[in-house]
Every structure is written in structure tokens, then in C-alpha cells.
Length: 453
Image (cartoon, rainbow, N blue to C red; front, side, top):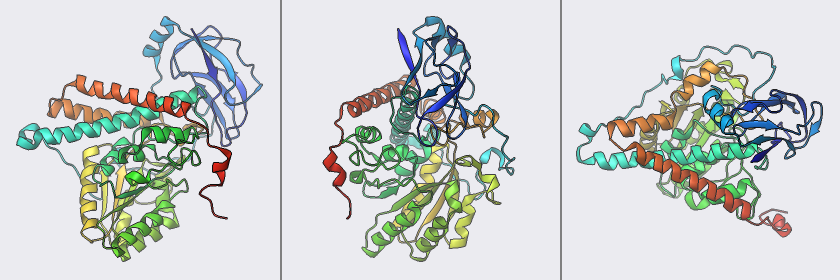
């Protein structure tokens, strides 16, 4: 069977690209994830990956030709030898695209060893012997966390494969590697607590309990999407579970979350507002103004910085002279806690403490979760500013595999049970995509709804 290789949406505008050269020849065997060709976008020269293993067949689009997103440029055959090759020769750094020839970026300032937190260390560990009668319940909580993290990972990876096939409209900003932050934080919240997300919102919404079908339909721009197909991937929301509209402007949700938290205090409610943001946002005015106002007003807010080291392509060491963003909390008179963002238990423990403090009327907390995104900033980002050794070191600390070892080792959870959970997650993801594809398009009249004139 032949599978079409289509041009995905690349670059800033998602417009036509020009083929520079093919990296493999017709009839060659290629591995899934291997570079097929170089293309020039409006941003840079990048490589397009194979979405599956197999033999490359023509007709191949010629070098120098202009190709529109979704256009077929070749085929991959269903070749058993190619599948074997894929397993044996998968690249060590599975980026979707990478810069073919880019100038070396300025060397960043040295980061703390392993990007480990220095301001404060939060770690919770409970062995079966220590747990006693509560051990089973505790283990089941961790199994639930594993299931949610696996669902987020399977969802993001599945959409990535569909994107490579040109089947996802628009672009994607993905969170593979950061699952422990979303799940650790949201596991400490109630349904009526509010979360404000960023341009990378999928993990946060899934962890808060939003509908997977509605999220997917929104990405496909369908009427059944969580905001009616009007927001797309960067503006997801599900008010029924307290997931407010995600904000693609860097740092912009920080003062908004502060405002919600202030309203809770003024109404005498014990609800909490959480703002997720990246390390780049910690250098914006909205960060400083939002945290200062929240502190002055004793607002029940929790500010969660997902420090994945890069603001788009700029290393944090090039933009700040502190080791931990959490150190900045002291300037506003609030606690600052830096945690290992690849450890869901550590993130949960820090969030639980911060949420309890907020509910008790003692004000906000800044949590810095040291984490890493495995993919580029967006699907059009080549990611060539990161070294292979760095990438390999972080994937070696993968939060899902770390929790798997914890469950099978310390709590004797059968590996087969965790594998079944992952299989079920994949089935849910595929069903959500099918739901989105079959959903109706928004009507023209709906474009006039929910607007101010």
C-alpha cells in the first residue's frame, strides 16, 4: 500500500514553500522520523520528516518547485523491510524539523547542573512499606496521574503524526515533556478553581478535565469545538471545568488570573486562580505587575512558571542573571518554590501547599517547574538551537517513564496494566480525532455571535 507524503503547514504564515533538495532518493528505504527533504519557508530552511517507515516512491516534486500545504509530493510504500529499518535507525533526536544550515546561536550563560532547582527543593516519596494502609490509595492516585499524562502524550504525538501528513489545519504548539507540570498542578485543584493557559494549552486543559472531543474539534475549527471553532489550538477553553480561554500573548494571562483571584477574595470564596506561563513571560511587565498586585491584595493565586529553558529559541541564560525564576518572588513578599518539573509528585506537593495557603487567605505563591519541551516552539520551528546532548539528557528524565518505574518498582503495579492504560488512551485520541473530522463546520451566521459592535 502507498501512503501519500503531503506538505505540512510550515513557516509563520503556513503558505507555499520551495523545495530545496531531497535528502533521500527515489526507491530508498527510510525510517519513521528520518529527514526526507529540505524546504525553504518564509522563516528558514527546514527538513520535513517521514511520518512512517517505508520505501520512497515517486513521482517526487522537483527541487525548486513551489508547493502548497496539503499538496502531495511523493509516496511511502508499506514495506516490511522499511519498517524494520525504522526501528533500527530512528534518529536520536526526534524533532519534526531541523535547521539545515543556520548560524550557531550565541552561547548561553551556564545553567545550573541538570537545570535543578536551587531556591527550594520539594520532593515527596512514599514507599509501600512507609505507606501502610494508605499505600493502595496513594498508588491509585499515581496511576490516575500516569493515565492523564499518558493521554496528553498520546494526544500530542498523534496530532504531530497527522500534522506531518498535512491533516491538521493551522499550526501546533505542543507540550511533550511537560506533562508532569500540568497534571501535578491540576491534581491539586478543585473543579471550580480556574486555570489560565498559554499558547501551549492542550496539556493544561486535559489535566483540568476538559472534553477531548471538544478540544480536537476546536483544533479542526469545527462547530462542536470548545469555543465553536473560533479559537483554534491557541485559544482553547472549557468553562465547565474551570479552564478559561487560553492566551497566546506572552505573559498576558498573569494579570487576568490576578483579577479573578481578587474577585474570589472580595466575594469571600475559597476558590483559587492559577496562571501558567513560560520562562520568557517572567521578563515581561505583566509578570511583575501581576505578581506585585496579587501580593499586595493577598489574592488567592498560584503562579506556575513552566521553565523549559527556551523562550521560543532564546535560552533563559541569555536573558536573566539568576539561576531560579522563583527567586523573584522575594521582591513581592510571596513564597517562591523551584521544583523538578519532570516529577509529577514534586509538582503536586508544591501546588498543594500553595493552594492551601491561598485558600487560607495568606496570598499567592510563585512555583517554578524546571521542565523541557521535546518539540520545537511550534510545528514550524526547526529547533536547531538545541544540542543533541541536551535533548537526550532531558528525554532521559522523561516524566512518564519516571512515573512508570515508580509504580512498577515501589508499588508493584503490573507493567501490563500501565500498557493497557496507554492503549486505552490511544483509542480515546483516535476517537476524538474521528469526532472532529465528522463534526459540522460553523455556519456563516455564527461569525456574528459573541462579538461586540
